[in-house]
Length: 217
Image: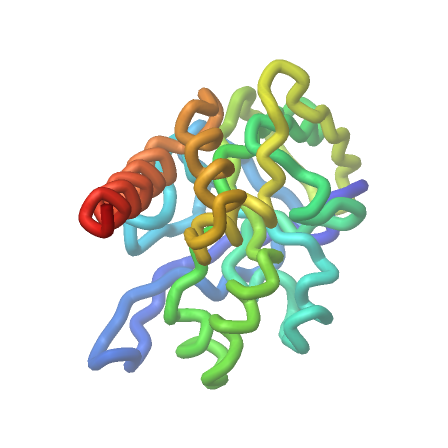
């Protein structure tokens, strides 16, 4: 496993929904310094949904570009690290990735938004992207340092808690219908490595579902 591409983005203003600032389109760099809140030089415009301690680094498997028929260079879909050799079906919340001196901890699936369709000019990408469960994932920074393109990645599965597979957890939240979905969401809100943002979102979903069941009797 390795860092196939290391990507940094600067804010740009797009004519989306009138006018929208975004740093989703990132450019590949040879090396970058990582702090607790992200890569030096990388910008987040929507601080409600991006950035912060729980979402300092966004990781996307390289094969997703082919999966979603995106021909643009790595970084185009908004990821900081384009990963080779591991995907969302093999990664769980709380897993750790060591890249040289840097240590990352997986905190949540990515929550894709309408900007993917706006960026690519497609009307179907967001739907296909979400329904696949292959959405990428965010990490918090356990140990800071410098990362370089082609650095080796060592994957340390979380052995302390039950495994919440990134693709399965995302789809459980996306659908929130079956008993298995509800079981996963209940399990997730108890997981200490889950990001605060996702814990709060999942709790709202579960509360709404419970109220609906109570109403129906």
